[in-house]
Length: 523
Image 1 (cartoon, rainbow, N blue to C red):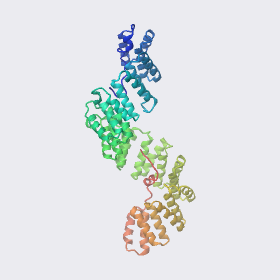
Image 2 (cartoon, rainbow, N blue to C red):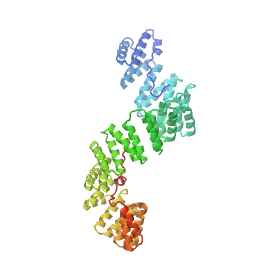
Image 3 (cartoon, one colour):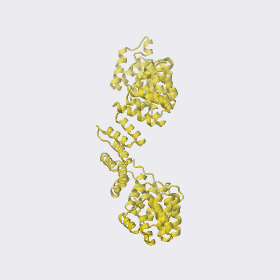
C-alpha cells in the first residue's frame, strides 16, 4: 500500500492473458521492457512494445506497458486507451486496473470532485469485485472518498483492509482525517496518537489529510500532527512552513517566527521564506526586524514589486516617508496597476505634505478603483489640503452617504466651512462626523475649535476633552484647549502652554493613519 501516487504496475509476468495463452512471448521479453521503463529509456521501451504488439496483438501485458510509457510522457488520452484495452483483454488484470486508477487520480488531483476522481473510484470498485481483499484498491478508495467528503464510506474501506494493513501510517492518517471530518474528535485524537508513534510515519501521511482538516477548520489537530513530525525530526522545510502559518493564523506569532527561522536554517535564504518572516515580524510590530528580512529579500529578487511595496509600508510605519516613497515608487514602476501601491504613494505624499503629488496618486487610484469610496475621500482630503475646495467638495459630497466614509467626509466638509468662517455649517458637519464615529479624535478637536470661535466655551471644553481622551497628543486639541484656558482665565493655562510647547508643532496626519482608511495588504 502506497500513497495516492501509487507506482506504475509494470510487472506483467503474472498477467492472466499470459498464463492462458498457448502461444505467448518469452518472459524475458517482459523483463526487458520492464527494465527499459524502469531505467527511463522510454523510446526503446515504446519501440519494443510496438514490435511485440504486431506479433501478439491480443497480449494485454504489452498494452499495460504501453499505458505506463504514455503516462510517463504525459499523454493522458493515449495512456487511458492502452490501460482500457489491457483490462478489456484481461478483465482480471490487477496491475492494469491499478495503473488506470492512478491515471484517473492524477487527472483529478487538482479537483477531487472532478470526473477523473469519479473514474478512479469506479476503476477501483471494479477491481474489488474480483479481488475483494486488494489493499491498494481499498486504500485508494478510502483516500478518494475522504477527499470527496464521504468520510463514513472512507472508514468502511479502511475497515476492509487486510489484517495489519490498517495500522500502517498511511491508513492511520486517513482514519484520523475521516474521524475528524465526522466530528468525532476524541477518536481522531486517539488515532493521531497512534499515527505519531508509527515507525513508518512520514510527512506525506500528514499532507494527505491536510485539505480535509483545513476544510473542517481543525487547526489545532493540524498543529498537533505537524508538531509530532517536528518532535520526531521528520518535518521538512515545507512542513515547517505550514506549521508556521498555522501558528501565525492562531496568533502564536513568536512560535511562527522561530519555526520559520528553523525552516531557513541550513539552506540558502530565499525570498518567499524571507517574506513570510517579514510578515510575521510586521504583525509583531517589529518593524526593524521586518525591514531586515525585506531588505534581504529585495537583494535576492530586485524585480519583485511585492517586496518593494511591503518595504514601503514598513517604512511608513517607521516614520521614514522619503525612504518609503522611494520603495513605493519602485513598486509602482514594476506594477503600475496595483491599486494598493498607488494608494500608498498618495498616503506617503500626504505625510510629506506634497499635496499635488498626493492628489495625483489618489486620482490614479480612483481610476483603478472607481467604485471604492475611500479613494474619493482620500482624494477629497488632498484637494482640501491643497486649497482646491471646489474639487474637494465634489469628491467629499459623493461619498458623504457611504457608511465607511461618511464620518470622514463630514469632517473635511466641516473643516472647509471653518476655513470659510461659516461656523454654523461647520458645527453641523462636525457633529455628524462625531455622531457617526464617536472615537474620531480629529473631528472632536475640530468641533472644539469651532465652538471656541463661537465663544461657546462649555461645548468647546466638552469636545476638546473628548478629543484628548482619545488622542492625548493631538496638537490641534491641545492648542485649542490652551486658547480656551487663556480666554477663560483658567489657572491651568501655564501648564497647558508648556505641554503645547513640547508637542511637535509640525505634526501632520500620518500616512499610517491614512492607510487605515482602506484595506492595504502589504503581503
